Length: 223
Ligand SMILES: O=C(CO)[C@H](O)[C@H](O)COP(=O)(O)O
Image (cartoon, rainbow, N blue to C red; front, side):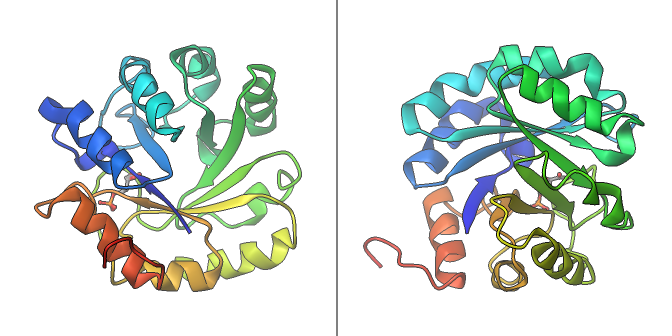
């Protein structure tokens, strides 16, 4: 299971320092939650923050993963690609032309992901399984960090795992993933876990990451 800490719950006054600490502790991806106040009831940040974190991603070999929770994502794909995102995910509910958005991301030379909300059926992304590198299943209603994982989405993760067969498509779970819930996500078939408040919280970041690895039954250096 790859860990993709979401910076949404980080201390933005110390963003670079916190992300560097997480990278040094061995995280795999850096997850960037972009919110527009329209697709979701919250506003976060735009391409400037992606650009600011690009050098850290290079330094630590982490993948920079931009999750666009914005309407009409097509309008901003070039900006996020130019800012340095490696992978750009759009919501199937946010555009009537999600296939075109995926084509645009690939034409920009980036990996493409498609996301769906908890109540959105898998059929919304079924026609895209041979077109994308990642499918993101929201395990909370998007907009805010620190929510509780909706357990019924785990059955959807299992169905997606079966649907994908041996296709090399990542299954990402996002929302409410912590040491208590991460093993069930892995068992259901998720390959990447977004972890926000479980990493950027009161606990020292390296300890929080070790706890997640231990919950997954993975070896943790020095433990
Ligand atoms: O996409 C998100 C919210 O829309 C966040 O990535 C997600 O909620 C992660 O935060 P936490 O792990 O605290 O739930």
